[in-house]
Length: 523
Image 1 (cartoon, one colour):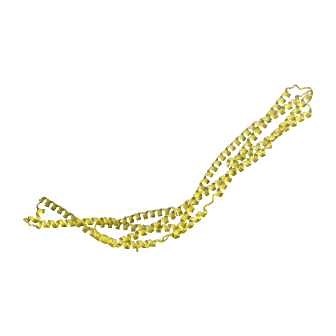
Image 2: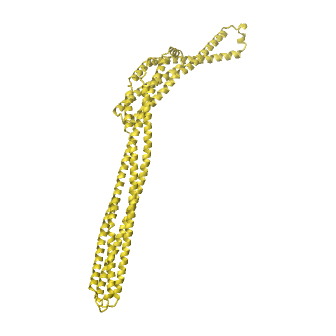
């Protein structure tokens, strides 16, 4: 009982405080995991919305490009208008040359009407130029919306990085809590081993056990097993001390992130301690096995007594005279019985001789094992000294507790992240609405340009028909009024100038629109 010193244990109050802190930290980690799950769901929905918006923006951009190409094609087709104007000018000259003096009065109202219609056509040609500023503004807004989408993608990347950092912190806290649990289990196992070693020492030092080992030959097998177990226990203790020293060095070298290596070493140590506990339980059952061997030896002693009694009876039969019938009638009356008893005695003698040889060998083994058992207290004392030299882990547990507090304080709050996600979702909705509005306005502008082009074509067709009708009329003797001709020429020049200005402005607007679309594609 007094050979071993019990290891210093942890204060129960500190252990309960540490356990409460671990429970609280686990609750906070669970809450953080739930927030993380909800945040991941929001991010997934936001990513899906971003993909949909990006695909819609790409489709809208492609549609705008198609509209621009169709407008350019229409402008190329509208180049025929210049040729028609030139042809109209030539016809006016022909009419001027071929017009008679009598038709001048009749042509005056027609020329005035034609000049008025040319002015209307010029005004209609100049009308679509004004909304191009609005289209440029909407395209600028669409560009800013694309920049906003890019900014949202960057913020989503930052949120993903923060979430991964938070997951790493949670893994570190979990590893630290597992490590604390292993240290506590190791301390409990050390206390239990000390108690078992004290019980083993008390059993080994009992006088009754020594007397039984000296008297009973069948205990040699159990003694060999006990010696083997003691040797394995000593080796296990040495390995335990080496592993504890290596674990302490690893913890001192890497106090914070030494997760996997320390966990593996502690797991191996726990397995060793479990195996040692099983061996100690086997040694505790040694007394029962010795009692069973004692019963066997007693049975052998009874058998030896029976053999001795039979030897005495056989000697009495052999020493009795032949004519002495009264004393040995019961023995000599049946020769078959005497032969059977004699054969039994011979077999019993052989068995006794074999058992005597076995007992002699067992006594020699008992002497050898007794010497080895005498060395066991010294070895146990050495193991006790080594166990006492193992340092206390209270300081390490305090450092781990401080580290857990720091990690718990560094866990970020998810309320700000949720607010940012709400604002990002709102901005994404606004951006999508702006893109749709820009598409609708582009379609309206395209429709208006198409209507204006149709009106111009119709008016030019009417003018051409009027000029054809004037050219087909027979020239009269009169002359055309110079004032009307001048008005017609000025209207024609004005129409050509408005057509050229409209074409130049429209091409510039199309070039700016194509550049903005190209920039949107590059993003």
